[in-house]
Structures are given as C-alpha cells and as structure tokens.
Length: 511
Image 1 (cartoon, one colour):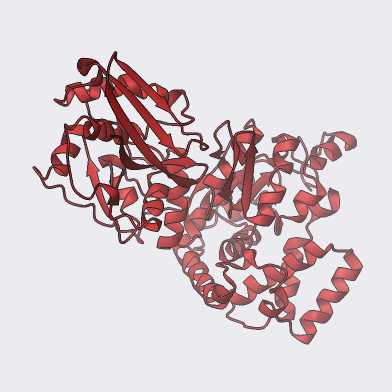
Image 2: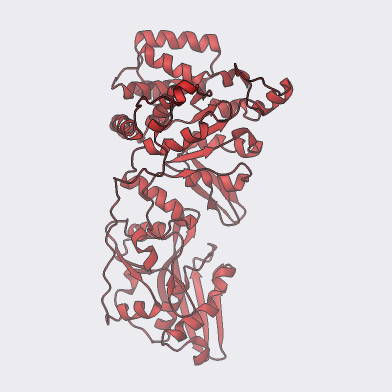
C-alpha cells in the first residue's frame, strides 16, 4: 500500500506543498520518480540508495523491489535536491523499516549525501511559512537551515544532521530539541561602512543622503572623478535604521531562495548590492529557466548602488523603470512566472561626461559636445524622472579637505533617520505603507497637506518648469520627508523649496 509524506517545493519565492507518495512491490529492481521532476530530482535515486545503505537500512537494490515515487501534484515542476529526505522517509515507511506517529502533521525537506548526512537546501523559510499556513505542527529540516526556519512562530522546527538521526528521533529513541527563535540583533556593528564625519565637505550631498535615507528615496549623485560619490554612497547604509523583524523575514526569504543566507541563516542587516556595469538584465531583474531573484530583489529594503551609471547597458537601465514604480517584479517564463518584491533605494553615481570635467570651473572638458550629450543620454528622461534626488558633487577645496572641524557622525544622522521613519510609520500604518517613497496617488493629498504658501510656490514651479505629473508627486513625497525630519505635520514653503532644489538639478536640464 502506498505511503504519503509531506514535503514542499519552491516556485519563485513561494513554497508549494508536495505529497511524496511511495509504492514498493516485489520484482526486478527499478526505481522510478514521476510527477514532473527535473534532472536534479531524478539523480536523487543514486544518492538515496547509498544514503539509505550507509545509514544502516536495507536499500532498494538489495531488496529487489520495484519502487515508484510520485510527486503530487504532477502539474508543478519540481527541481532541486530538497526532496531527498522525504523520499527516503517514504521508502523506509513503505518497506516497514520505519514507523512513527503524527505522520500527517510533519513536513520533511533536505538533501542527502552518500553517507546519509543532511545538507542544507534553498527556500526553507518559505517552506516554514507554508507549513504554518497548512496548520502542520512540525517541520524537520537540515541543521544548517534550522535557525532560518525558526524565524516563523507557532511551529516546531527540528534541525537534523543525518538520516539516521531523523529516524531515531521519529522512533523516539533520541530527543532532538526544537530550534529557538533567533534573536535579531539591533546593535549591529557599523565599522564596515564609512562614517560621514570622515568625509570632509560635501554638505549638500550629505543632506541629500539624510533625506533619501529618511524617506527611502532614490538618489543620483553626479560630478567629476574623485569628488567622493562612491564613498558617499557606501556610507548610506550606515545611516539607515536597523530592520524590523518583519522586514528581516522578507529579506531572509529572498536570500534563502537564492541560497545566500550563509551560516547564520538570518539576514539582519539592510542589503547593499553593487553589481558591476557588465551585469546582464536577467541578473539585475531576475530570471533563469527556474525564476530566481535578481539584484533588485536582493536589494529589497536596502540599497542598489549602480556606480558609473551610464556604463550600464541601456536595456538594463530601462528594465528598472517598472520595479521602481511598483516595488515588485514579475519574471515570466514558458515554464511559469514568479513574483519577487523589489522595494529598494536606487543610488546612482556618474560623471557629467566621459572625461568628467564638463561644467568644471578649473578643468577643461576635452569631450566633443555630441560625445558628452550621447553619454548623458544613456540615462533616459523617464528613468531620471523616477529618481527623486539629484545632487551635484563637486571636487572639494584643499581647505575643506584638510579641515579639522568636526561634523555629524553617521550615528547621529542615523538617529535622525530613525526618528523620521518612526513618524512616517505611525502616519502610514493605516494605509499599509512603511516609508514616504511608497505613498500612492490615491492617498498622497491626504498624507501630504500643504500650507497655502507652499501650494502657491509649488503651483508656480510646476507651471514654469513644465514638471510632469510624476515629478509633481515625487516633489510632494520629498517635501513630506523633509517636513518629517523637522517634525512638522504640514508641508511648508521651505520644505517645497528644498525638495525642488534637489529634484530639478543641472543634470535634468542636460538630459
């Protein structure tokens, strides 16, 4: 009689319940896996045979059995090695080498090595979420994935190191402690990020970084080589507040599917991704035969830094436009589609022309006008319209570079950012948003009330500068953030003026 074991497979970011059905009959040896399994699942037959034998059980070849494994539902493509453990458990149950209670309330995932050890797999956090939704009581996972799965409350997580250990636990011969919920450290070290106090001058850029961090706004810094654009961008993560537990779960889930959680199994720092300009569009957006998260999803709730922005291929830059608006990306393939979150801060850095000296008062630009124009045109108008803050970063004078004057540290600025984000979270909670950059058109008027003076100024600027509807709404969002930094419920004239100053840069006029 067939036996059934609960397991799961990963489809993009989501986990799907898989019933592993195993049937054994006497006859010439055969081991067949059906149910739309890919090559990696098919190869598990040989791994399982060795793992079962080396764990002290009678393997399929030694018993001359015809073994049929059905992975239901058959309409879902299964890939990866995470079904090794449930297939092995199903085989042992079908051959009466193992019996245990509460079979229906347990879920198994894990890859088996030839000696019976259990190796880590991808997507365990999504599987733990699925198990909780299904009302299962226990999930048995590789020991290396246990901390990751334990992030989900109200489900018992057992981390195991070998097939022998799992069978002994199921037969109640040994006791395995359930994994405790990991502690999300709030006092993480910021030693790896440059401190803003060590960057001399560039007060306008520092102010723009403060506003960007407080509201989660996109920012573009442009200026000559050596002016400090890259180090300013790298210092940005140091002023972002720590992630909440819910944000950590969202980010860890993405990294788990990508296989990037590392030994800790928990991502508790905001991501900072800095892909090279030769990176392809699928690597940035996500893709593959089996959809995997790209750089924009790996930057979720963190920073995507694109240095030398015009050097990226045009199709790569244009592919960012829709995710920057929607906060998610849908990757469609013939085998299916996957949805990945992409709430990231885009931080770009670029020179004004190939030689970098266009607009400089001290250095002559050697680029032909058409060459410089073509270089800037790589950043299209629609993409630039989606970047909230655009700030010029000039080369600093020797006087500023050699100054011993103390400036605000990243720690002090981070406190301001955290306070502003707390105000935003309280205001936006009823709308389902976390930060000002997420405000949609439906609620923007209610969330961004203007004083009479501010409304008059903004109206004149929109008419005079021919600002688009998107640009108008982004000015409102930036102004809302500036007002929150000053603890002002109403947006005033000075808030609008500063927002417009950062929004309508020299680069906007050049492109």
